[in-house]
Length: 160
Length: 398
Image (cartoon, rainbow over all chains, first blue to last red; front, top):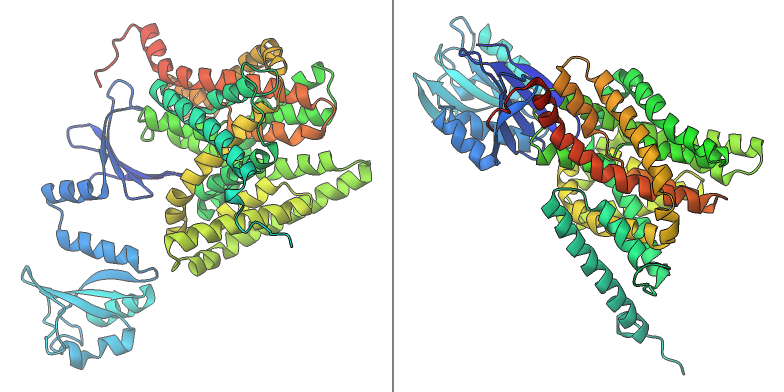
């Protein structure tokens, strides 16, 4: 993956910029209100954008879908934005984890860490809102929501 | 038994006031459309409209000044409130940490022309310092409009421009109360005490806003749009009024309220407050020149022209110096984008209303803003073409 540089624009938003394999400089400017601009820099004056594409939040989703980004992550990032102080993480159940083989209920993960499993991804199949009877099989990816600290404990428990 | 009118909206005097204000605001709306079509800011047109219907103008109107002057003062508060809303506490902290050098270059290069011009015109030091403020601060309204209209938010020189706007706002947070204290003070000692009190109050509120702003924002977060608008408007007037009582400018109080709001509340507040700001601020610009004699403005065109040329050169130089990491054309773009002066120059000039040279200052400031606010966006727009023509390269197809 190419290097992405981030630039803060006070009062406006944040700009992420990278160079494509064809050598063009491309940037995405995320305005604070959710609007985006897709920018392509001028080859003769690399400080200036020749093409500017203005996207509303809806347009951004459509474009992202056409480019192949996962809708799951889109929806989850929307949740993340709404609930301040909460974070979301994807954690793979490790081979040697003591949680491997436990069900979600018997693992008591939620009681220990405060983080809840909102989805399980197993062999590219997603189980949304899995019940307590679901088993944690090594290789499963658990999508968990919790406080940043809770998620850290959660990761530790699933990895060892 | 006398009957007290419960609702003044039915009284004959209110009827006259409504007609007057309606005519004025409709006139301003036509000007705003016209300016929008030309692609420049409406501020110069509001100023000209005020002159045209003011005393000694083309068609003098006898307006109920009390009402309009209050509206205009609220306009200043809302201008500063939206400015404070523009930036998050983090952005201001970053500005404070990294911007001392750039801020000083900007201050020295752009305060000096106005200050020296004021002294050359034989004004007192306070009025000259106000003129220094007039030439110093770029119009963040015009600058962001230029960046938006020309699609330059993504350009590499733009962060420099935006950072400088943050710094100028922070500089205003010191400059306005200090000047306010100097204007209010009579004896040297009393003035020094005033300045000390003003700076202490600003530092205190600024620290509170940066540290505890998120608490206030969290308190306001569950409010409906209506309740949010009312609480922000109320707080702005309240803090502005208290700040004015302790001889800190009310504008700074409003600015600090804007700063204190952060996160989702800040995002929601901006679109709520902006229409209100546009309405009241238009009244402010109109009323500012309404009170001036057209002679005071047009008579000042020559000195204002000379001052504008100098101040344009110093602002372009500022942009050029600060945008040192980008190419020549981008450096010129940064400089020309910053040329326009506008709302804050007028706010600063209106501070000196009580001074001996108040009319001269305000006339000169109005003429100066008229010139730079029109020339600045045009320079920003055409600088690319000029520098392309110099090199003999054809402009890239957009």
